[in-house]
Length: 316
Length: 316
Image 1 (cartoon, rainbow over the protein chains, first blue to last red):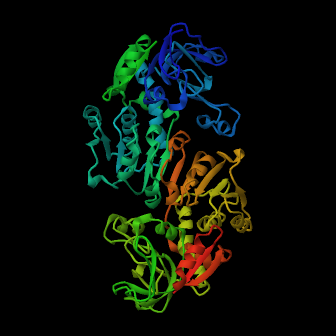
Image 2: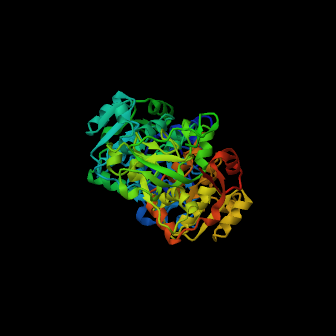
Image 3: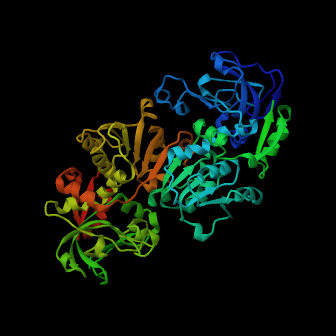
């Protein structure tokens, strides 16, 4: 099959890569999305080698569950061992022996086929297009914030970052909190966010400091954490959404002195994201950028790396 | 008056230091305690210059409130501006213009007299001795954890550190959570903790890793944070109690990947601590070490710095 895999140094293309072995559902990938995490993996994050890609929509070709065959699906990306304490509690996402599609010990979606356990798959209603369906995984990651933090409508909320994940987070937070300010860097992206009725700022003014009840760090850059800590009120809640922004030279002293709560946040459950897209509660259409054939992965990755790019798709 | 003050380099003694000016309650210090924070200030923390000391019990000599005069009191150490949003919400502890007794722009308790706003003072019942009363401030800091985290009795709890604050935290957590393990370094201190019915360990075994629902970091050392992050379960709660342990070379990536919640925790309200001492719910008698006259501050500080020392008092 056609596949784009990472050997630890370069992203390679192979049109004769082995098809995944049976034992799980075999899914033919209709469309895959390029995520910031993919770009981080290409920079060495997770030390992952193999087929990249964890945002996808596909069609089930083989499965032990006949009801799934031929259905259009998206898939939760964490596959637990099924027997540990985390898995028994339904927290496969935190199984210490988990594999993660395109991220950890499991080939991903930048290929003609992928395999996942049947229970990871969610059938997608016809009202959701393929392009929209690819957003289910990152949108679920945004909805995870609502699982972890009891959002209050009167809160003053800041989102630090203006990239793809930041924009999805803003769409989700807006469902509860009308008062949101986005601190970004790229004027062109911020225009898209402005149409969502959100205040936008480039740079932090002194009047912004310590003035937000909730700050979500979603920059994917090293300066994200210090900007976030400038904005948060004493006793406020910070949600950390990007792992890459949270390394090195951090000083947690203000966290202790100002009694900040930092909430690490990663993957979310798919159902709220599917429901939000199906009902039109959240629209992602303004975030669709362009689609490349899988063979043009190199151009697609280059495009995705440019600061103003929204969601780029690969079509096997 | 007699006072021990820090000039940024050395701790000095002066028997003719000016008595605090009127405008607040004037308190004659009966007894003051030496805290880890005092030792950190002597190492440069907070860049504080002035009279050290924030744990005390004293007798009110002058006050605009005649009911206070002659009463034995302890005092909340943060004095807010009274007009900002934090102060209006009763959160003087987070007032951006606050002074803090013996820590920030306010002379402290290692002296014959100190001054504090009347509303900061709490009258101490006769059933609490002077030595016990000095523990109200650090015990309030331990009770702050109960204000911030909804403790569950079935939780497996770890306290990292075996010093004075760690021991008070263990006493407070034990009121709700019977299953506590203390990870310490000093065998002699751990014996004291053992009598509280708490499991003690020197060093982390592989079976301890990711096995605690709640971990409290109270080491006051740089290795505290990484040990803490080894112990916490995915989706667990970490309470950060020591600012000094939270600087430099930190990696928050596991916080995001394992969706940990980090709760910074500093000072607490005095009432729960006074009640716990008055009712005997918490006993601090095993933590009393020795008392030095204020003039012997230098020997007292040296003693407090030794790893096995419990609470050392200064008597003006």
